[in-house]
Image 1 (cartoon, one colour):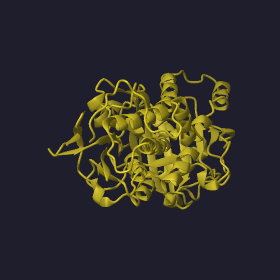
Image 2 (cartoon, helix red, strand yellow):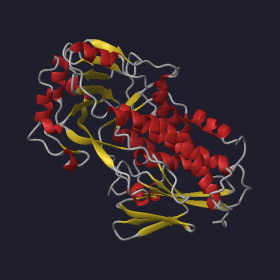
Image 3 (cartoon, helix red, strand yellow):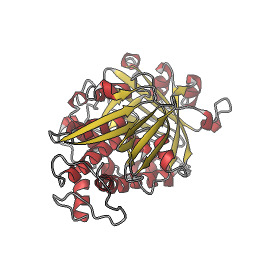
Image 4 (cartoon, helix red, strand yellow):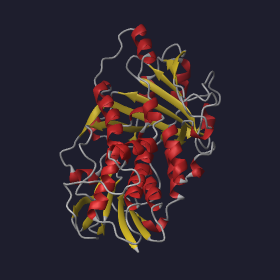
Length: 435
């Protein structure tokens, strides 16, 4: 019987989705041993709200995570509109987003408390395969396999390593130490709380709403399981009493008084929302240049924010991670289809699968990241007319939110001349002995 040992660094949404996806490779002739290593001491997902657009929800369904598609777990707006954009002062609707090809309700954009989505994914991963308190110190790979080295002095070995350890990925640093992150000039205030706190706010929009001002924005939405979220965006250098963003840790306690002061002159709905928000946590926004490659030493790759450091733009991170996981599964399934039952994967086979994955995902995420980086430091609108025009003329995100990862993979197969074939021709990877 063939077998592959896969190490996944990180058991957040990207790591869990990857484990769920790759486990589907298992068959009577092929065993898949997946072990996840998580730096946290318990399986509780930090963070606040998270959105999944139609592409991510369709992939959740492919993964078999039907328990996350219920309206009780994720909130979908009653108007079937993914986002409404309002004016910061007048509260009038200036624009909105619309679905193009999302006929099924369960695939319409949904908003979750991150912890609820994380728990839904956890139900599909055996707890025995998740190792806690295993912060990655370093990673290595050679012709014989991959090794993860942990902060507690222990290590783990396998055939394939998937870095799912987030924006500040230690796996990415190990294989691409030159890559760096840059503060985008924004820090987010985020909060989630019981939706009962907003029940008495007059004229509160029932749908997810994004208010745009000349320099800042404000977002509010109901979440699944009767939760509510508020999100503010600001430049902390404008507040002398706030901390330098370079020293602020992700999900750190914030000052709710600064949050309220930032929006004190906005319309009554936004102001009321800040007043009922019981606390805020800080999320400094960092982004980095697109990677040239996601494949290292023919055995290592990245998923989620470790692969595309886009800084959370367009609330796309969760859906991107899910599509990464599915594309990685499709790539290995393609390679396995051309191998005789019971035969082990060679290093070349692994490289071929990871290359298919990279060709499927890297161009798509690179498009997003280049757009994000191009927008950093863009001048603020100087007049109200300029603001309204900016809201109305924002670029369409349909290419991102309704992306079809399976169609993208099929296109790569056609481009590579692979239709029902298993192996890429790669002169740069020599034939090697079986694992």
